[in-house]
Amino acid sequence: MQTLIATPPEATQPVTPTTVSVAPQTIAAIPVRSRAARAHIVIARILLGGVTLQIFFAGLGVFGVSSFLPHMILGPLVILGSLALPLVAWRGHLGATLLRRSWLVFGLMILQGLLIDAGRIIPLVAAFHPVNAMLLVLVIASMARITRAR
Image (cartoon, rainbow, N blue to C red; front, side, top):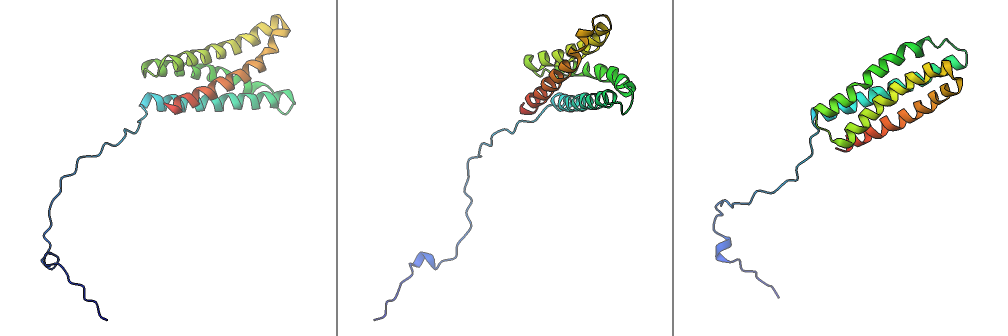
């Protein structure tokens, strides 16, 4: 038994293209970082690298591989560089939390230098110099993470 399938007459006619209007789709806005936020991330990472290098130079001095001179030369440069963080956060309107942490980093950097000077008078105070360095690493790393999340 043979079955014939009949095609409807409208299917044999040529198809003419028609235009269909489609409502524009809403695409979620991709957050674009401001230049200040990107600069803040870069400065924070450079400072983190500078503090890490400082710890390395201190280790070289402690174990007698070299003198403390590289540690003493790089220290003021890192402290001066840390002043850029709160200035960029303030001018870039990056938020109160980031601004406070940026000032905290700068304050801890100033304290880092003062601990050495105070350690000449009271040697026990100088023992907080490496503790403050660890605190600086934690604060700068958390700040870079906060800026990246913005």
